[in-house]
Structures are given as C-alpha cells and as structure tokens.
Image (cartoon, rainbow, N blue to C red; front, side):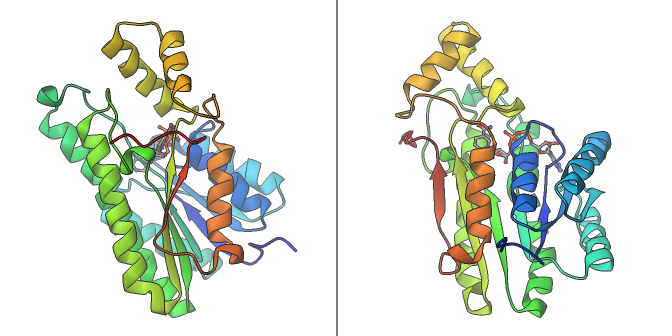
Length: 266
Ligand SMILES: NC(=O)c1ccc[n+]([C@@H]2O[C@H](COP(=O)([O-])OP(=O)(O)OC[C@H]3O[C@@H](n4cnc5c(N)ncnc54)[C@H](O)[C@@H]3O)[C@@H](O)[C@H]2O)c1
C-alpha cells in the first residue's frame, strides 16, 4: 500500500516546473498523497501545470497562490485547503530565495529583508498557521528545506543566504522539541548541489568569484562532491517523502544532508 494514502500535503514554492518544490509534490503524489501546490501568483500558469501533472498521477490536487511573506495569504490558503480537503497532514516549507552579492560589504538591507522574510519568517508563519490544524488532528509532519549551507559556510555564497538557512535549522529544532509530545514531527532537509534555476544563479556567482566560465564553475562544484555530480531535484523529493512517511515516525529534529557526500564547509 502507498504510505501516504489519505494524507494531505501542502508544498510551498512548488510552481517552477524544474524546481525542487515541484519534484517534492510529484514524489508525495507518487506515494499516494493529495497535494496542494502553492507559489507566487505570477507562477499561476506553472501551478496549473503542476495540478494537471499531479492529477495525471491519479491523486487529488489543488493550487493556491501564496506569497509566503504575506501572513493573510497564508491564513487564507490554509482555510481554502481545509474547506476542500478537511485536513493538512504534511507541510513542506520549500519556498526560498537566494539573493545578494557574495561580497558581504555589498549586501543591501533589501537583500537581508527579503532573505529573512521568505527563508525564515515564511517558514515560521506557515508552520504557525498549520500547527493548530495538526494539533486538532492528533499529529503531522513538517519538513523544512534548508541547505547544506545551513550546516556550514563555503566561499562565494551571500551571507544572507547562509545565515537564513542556519536559522531554518534552529527553527526546525525548536518546533521539533515543542511539539514532539503532540506527535508533530519537524525535520529539515539540507540539499547540496541540485540542478534548478537557483543552482544556475549560484554557478554564476562562483564563475564571477573565480573569473571562470559557467562550465568551469560546474566542474569546480562537482569536484567537491564525492559522488562527482550535481543531482536532479527528485533526490530531494525522495528524502522528503521518506521523512513524511510512517517509516520515519521516530525521527524528529534532524537536519538531513542530501548532497552526494559533499562537505558542509566550516
Ligand atoms: N538548488 C539547490 O542547489 C539548492 C540547494 C540547497 C537548498 N535549496 C533550497 O531548495 C528550495 C527550492 O529551491 P530551488 O533550487 O528549487 O529554487 P527555485 O528558485 O527553482 O524555486 C524556488 C521557488 O520558491 C518560490 N518563491 C520565491 N519567493 C517566494 C515567496 N515569497 N512566496 C512563495 N514562493 C516563493 C519561487 O517562485 C520558486 O518557485 C529553496 O528553499 C532553496 O533555498 C536549493
């Protein structure tokens, strides 16, 4: 039997067809879950595509436009999901931004504000809106997408990204300890180098920092990965599906690297 049958999962930032969020949504559906995809309103066409793809897998699906920096949109989304499906069992806080310069002295207030609003406060606000639902249901699973950069720092990455991804892990641990007795598990997944739009931006930063081409930057990145390659987003989908499943029922508060053995830096 599929392990997530009769579960309702909500994934943030799941619009982009080649993003990690979409891969997570598809994997949760493969395991039997009903899936709610959310993303910024400008991604509504992509979200419709996601819903068709999910329904094609034989599950119920719905799309809701939500900017995770807007608390009222989060609250309205949770209400819409409850009206339609009556429950939320799995929340995947995947939406994230990577903005700013790798030169710390050039980071602007806007870079810091956007990074914190999306990467940290967005995760906190969505969790705050969903936890009472999970409490009423007798449990649930929250999975936050941090980064290998939430475990250690490497060169050529904006400090506002690294700092916010560390914060996601702190938030994950606090929620894990606060709600463990209510059967609400909270874990973080820490992707390494995953081939997406955001990954291309990181490669551009590395290329700029070292004065090399994008191909050379990719080769430099891959040389730091013991398994020797950057992976497809589905590897993160698999890790999330595992953490959401009954197989991980005794796991909470973990920060799971999915990075081909890459070191998290210092
Ligand atoms: N790609 C990697 O190598 C990598 C590595 C480590 C961690 N991550 C993390 O994985 C997650 C997904 O990243 P990705 O690589 O798929 O990037 P991506 O840019 O393809 O996807 C990010 C998604 O978040 C959405 N988003 C941005 N701001 C939002 C907001 N305010 N409200 C709602 N949605 C918003 C975007 O529209 C997009 O669909 C992010 O949290 C990222 O930090 C990625």
